[in-house]
Image 1: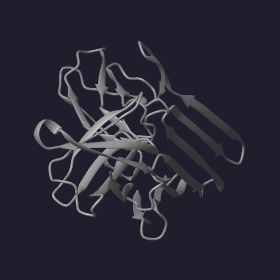
Image 2 (image 1 turned 180 degrees about the vertical axis):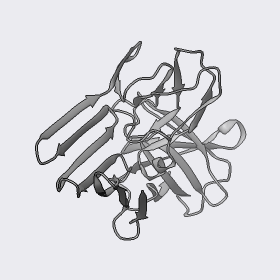
Image 3 (image 1 turned 180 degrees about the horizontal axis):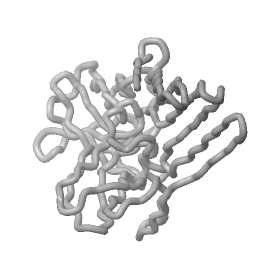
Length: 277
């Protein structure tokens, strides 16, 4: 038997071409030619094409298949044919986890799992889980953990491209018992990420070390002004008001209002100059 596999990544994404041939004195030669690979940005669509030929009875056959791994489960389908028959198969696999904070749909559940919680942060991808991401509430399930061993649940670093999400932590480690459902919780700030350049009414940067605070019914965030008036805040709503305070007992104060729009940079960071009165 002779087999050959050739990567086609340079011409056709993440894919391979395969060929095999076997020879038998009684049944002649058998040939198989195939193409397989993955597609989509997260490589969570797997595909396969195969064509076969047997010289003994001049028989031709083949199959094709697709498998899609998504946040809420896996969908697969295949079609097989020969000169005498045809067969179509399809299926759906997934999991449902009911917990104290609601119900979360996921890929197929293993014996030991983790509920991933990133409140309000939708679309965060999980490392080493093809196709899995947090739902609209910020929940998903890490469906396979190793019991009695240290497990690492990590948010993929491409979350930096999301302009409205900031994470205090991107990795949670845990040692679960067999059959446990553990929680991997991430601290999120959902809103815009902004680098303000703050000047006072005289056109000079506000003092280094000034404390910034923004508050509304749902948000309480703070930051410290840099030596050139730079102020970084995350999790901001589209519009708001920021109070700066400095000096003895923070007795000197000024206020500025801001209004934000969708960032143009790939980093998701908004830069804005403001005057504090």
